[in-house]
Image 1 (cartoon, rainbow over the protein chains, first blue to last red):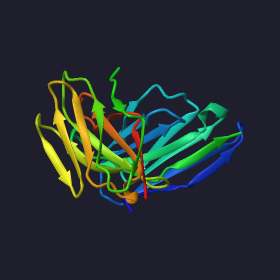
Image 2 (image 1 turned 135 degrees about the horizontal axis):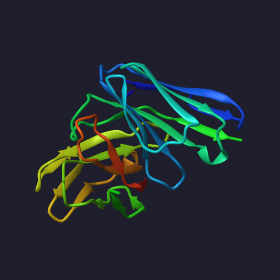
Image 3 (image 1 turned 60 degrees about the horizontal axis):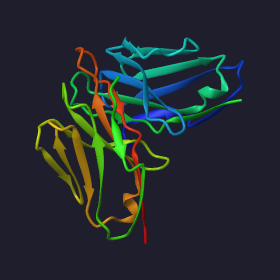
Image 4 (image 1 turned 180 degrees about the vertical axis):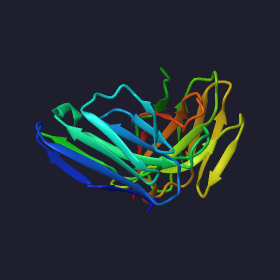
Amino acid sequence: ETGVTQTPRHLVMGMTNKKSLKCEQHLGHNAMYWYKQSAKKPLELMFVYNFKEQTENNSVPSRFSPECPNSSHLFLHLHTLQPEDSALYLCASSPGQGRNTEAFFGQGTRLTVV
Amino acid sequence: ILNVEQSPQSLHVQEGDSTNFTCSFPSSNFYALHWYRWETAKSPEALFVMTLNGDEKKKGRISATLNTKEGYSYLYIKGSQPEDSATYLCAFPFINTGTASKLTFGTGTRLQVTL
């Protein structure tokens, strides 16, 4: 148990659907992240939030829309996705600034777009 | 673009064998190097965060070394056990812009330990 919880664990959605991924952390961290892992590719950073403010958008298409209402919760809203968006989406949190602060990950949401 | 390379991609060893794998990263502008273990159906979990050239860290049977001048880190597992089976990831932080740490990950080394 890492203190970072993601729901749902698995999601199948059609290309015209709208769905949301949820992440919650109970660690008191200030920074939260969305990562994506596609097959045979490294973990890829998508978004960074620090103190609820988005500080990084790693050229992510607008069909992915993050939301961070407070430092403990992070959402990823999905709409009109493509089959190539099928991947494992991981949420992480960290105490905040600093290149030597480790990240704490959730177990991920396995997304399949049909 | 930061390139973080890991080798080998996969490794299959017998219980009791010792093993090691490599992470290569840009040697210029070094800040820190992270190692994570990712077991199937679980969350990636931090093993080590290394910051100093020549640093060596240990956690049980797992240890790691760091050479920032030549841009590599080794992860060693002594006397591998089946529970060590996992993907081992290394990650290199982007240049600190004053915001939260942002990590570039390697593709990982997938270790399988059999009886």
